Length: 136
Image (cartoon, rainbow, N blue to C red; front, side, top):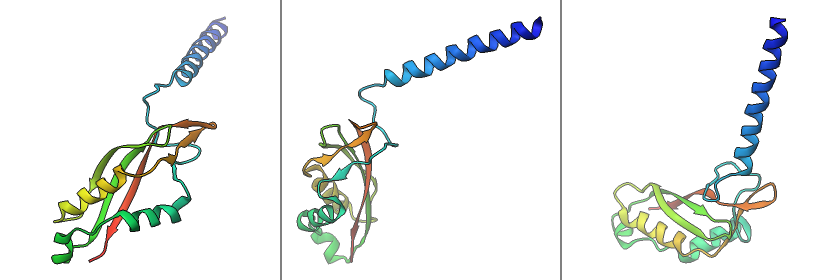
């Protein structure tokens, strides 16, 4: 008898937990920015076009050229559901070259729209990390 009651109680509790999970999934915050998606955000035309865009628009700061400073700047930004780039941040900059970091942010902020990330075929906001290399 105790086993039957205990089994029934566990069944009721597990159904309650499962229904809470489903409610949370369907009521996802519209402002949520995803890190795991089915299809990642992509620059229109793919990586080859992204590289062309960066080569055309990125200017090597005079200070860095003069002092032969090189390195990689890691930039993080959000690609919105409509493909617009926003919330551009420097995660890790080029040592001794704030101008390099500033230039990378400038170029990313003026990017054209991307193809947004998707979950279950629906466009969502997602984070994107982009390394930008400056060669001395």
